[in-house]
Length: 560
Image (tube, rainbow, N blue to C red; front, side):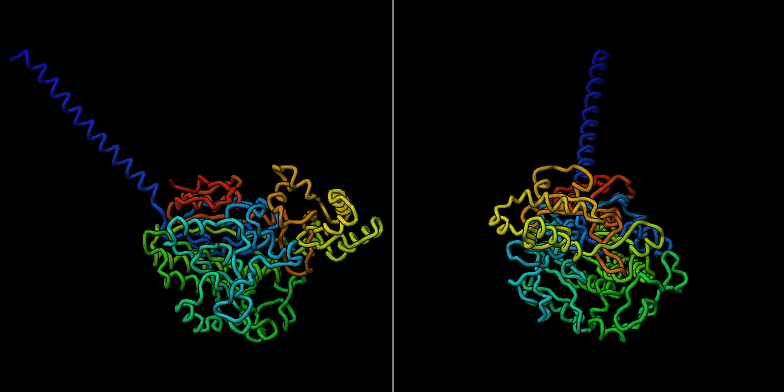
């Protein structure tokens, strides 16, 4: 009997080891399943926020006066990419919105400007204009818009395709292009603002044949009337120390007002400034967008099931204010302090409707802006203005004197020269020769910094510097024959207000904040690009990247 004890002990040991092994295997399987479940979990709603003409430094410049629940909440509890840039020029609204949502640059998505010269139609065209659709919610041609000129898909398109159109995708903005290009081709709806005597949100038959009842009800409530009121500073004007003086020479007053100073009696100014369109250039335009976005969130029941939805919101009034009053104006500072409160209101509604932890937000901008050159000159900074008509006269004068014909240029726009190839062919002039000829004239012209020919852009590969930015913004079929870059601080614009479009850091450096479900808390100073946003959100949603995407997911941002 004693001789059997060692054998019995060994058997019991083996049985216990096998049992322990099964428990460990079960635990490992459970842990793996939990990890996989987390990795496959997607937010119920993604909210993309684009702030039109927001320089990165607006986050820091106005930081101490922001509330805890708006920009600060996104920065504090989310992930802040502090060195985020556009990787192309021109830095305009339409290319910006298209690039954010397609994950690629104009060289692929084809939106090379807000307006551009169309070589086939031989005329200037608007990025979203579409005569094949009809306006809905208005009789104005402002409603004849669609995304058909955008050549690649968006992250919102890919979400619709992935979910067999069960996802709900809606775009909202004051500007048509700010709603349409983010919403994409397959969206349920895109709504933009019609000012004038209407003050309502409209769409086109590209998306739907009639407005939903909730939009009709919203418009019938005369939403713009409540904002046709005085615009005064949110706080005492003397406390706006992050800006210049309220009265200065660098701002443009609305028609009917002698100076660009607070307060602004909007009802008294509306008749001379386009009726309700005046609201676009005030903080109240952003309030209208926030109101409508929240109405869409509630009435469309967005984020209320396990199929992810996407709400694309673009706040455009910041751009109108920036253009009119400038980067250094009290008007701009007040607009951002008020926008901060609107973002806080939107986040609170998301908490209540969708639930904290169930939605993801990203916030960025479509471009930055230059400080007013006249103001920069007053501070001893190199800056100035270039006259586009004088440049055109200069080029045509030399063409006439040297080649006997000043009609070889068809169009000059967006810092591009378009040639008349039929006339060149008839004159037996080589296109490459004329490109180089014009390039030399341009580089000799005061205030022009760099010049690139079509030949150099199509036959070479620029990996860095301005050449890479130009090449990324150059579409072979749509762009011109010669592209030029103006010196830093120099603009083709009025002497009041601000503008944008250049490859300089004041136009390319914009905020990029991620917040919410699936997002890490932290920040990075590594360089990121605007085209990385769509791949990052696509990775979060576990869907295909947009079909032209050239950006990469920002891995530090994502939890899984």
